[in-house]
Image: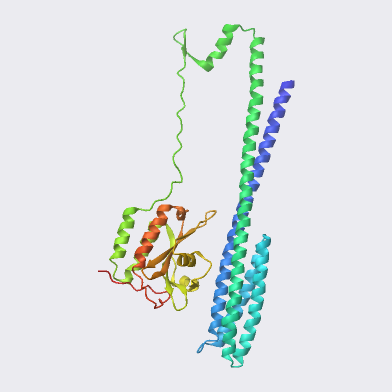
Length: 414
């Protein structure tokens, strides 16, 4: 009777522990899901806010430009300012990292100054003082918009780091709970097994069995009984086949034959209308969801998106030109004359940026957004460099700026 109660207690403790660990694992999974969703929403909102700041800056410049409808563009500016304010408020509600909260506060202060500057510029414009209005917009306005965008980017990076750390802790909790449940289950088996053996021995003694009977009782576990012969036959032992783990998560390798054919077609390209199809083949080669060929505009010291794959004309227009000293991978590839790699985290897309080099220096950049972690593959990086080197031969290397959002002129080969 006492042993029965001990077995019952062990079973109850084991089930309680397993239930507790299963609940902790479930809660950790819910936390992971929530953190991932909030991080994704925060990133999307911050990107939308950055684009709105770009549109705001363009609208401010437009209403002081000659020949533009001032009423229309001032209305646009007011709408963009309201959208920026709402976007900052939404981000503040989601932010949990102190650095992110501080960065959003600095961005809000810059937007307040930007709104005040816009009111002064509008007063000058209404008073037929376009030069004073333009001076405010193209000096203070650009600086304030850039400051707000930089602080939004800082908040996005800080929030991503904090969310990733929270997800790492949740994963560690799940691992600990799984290990604990496995240890409790194994301990329960080890504690209950001796009791089962002692119970069998006690039953055998109570039956008054001798050694022969013991062997007979043990026979089913070691022998097969033949109904036609009195002798016992030993079982053929079953040998477990070892399981060899197959190699998983192998490094992706582009199709070399497809790469060779692509470079050959780029080499003989004589019509710029064929370039979009070749960019589509490039995206398929390196598993890219989008490609952009950035062309250097020496007059403005900026990189302009000349042609892309995976982005429509409206998207390229929203992206616009970026200064060559910007703090991003594309500008860094141009300045350093070296490929820049942005590794995707938690299932997000990664990116590569390869410079387009010519005998007269860097004439542009090929940037690509890659899926499934392909940006970390050495073979994929090498393929992107090869294609970039071929594309560089198609671009002009002079000082004339390339027209934005238009296919770059193709230099004839041969």
